[in-house]
Length: 121
Image (cartoon, rainbow, N blue to C red; front, side):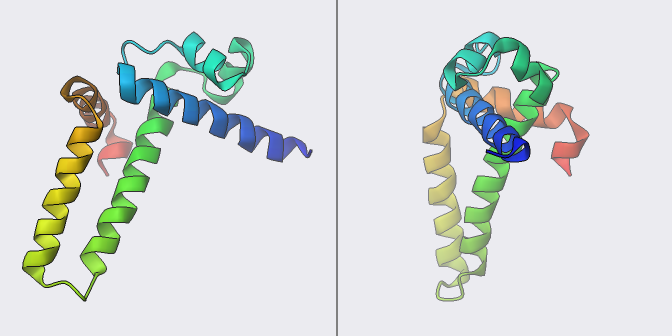
């Protein structure tokens, strides 16, 4: 396997593991050691991909935004729905998203995104 391919796979494993842990336990309660263990990647190697916990959380939040923004854009562009139907679809989507995370975890992701200007844009 090529080195670059392995790097992408390892990075994805770390983000997947961090997302899973952080979306159930919260950012504060998830340690980088727990993420590295869940991903099956050594603690030291993990720091080559994400030098700080904030860097790892940034990748998780970006993934979360990209996933949900893509889905929201599909709804926004759906010309088969009236404006009112799209609005209701947005509200249903938001309610389902809210149910996906506990209020504590959702609040932590929200707060993190507001502390980082690159996520606000």
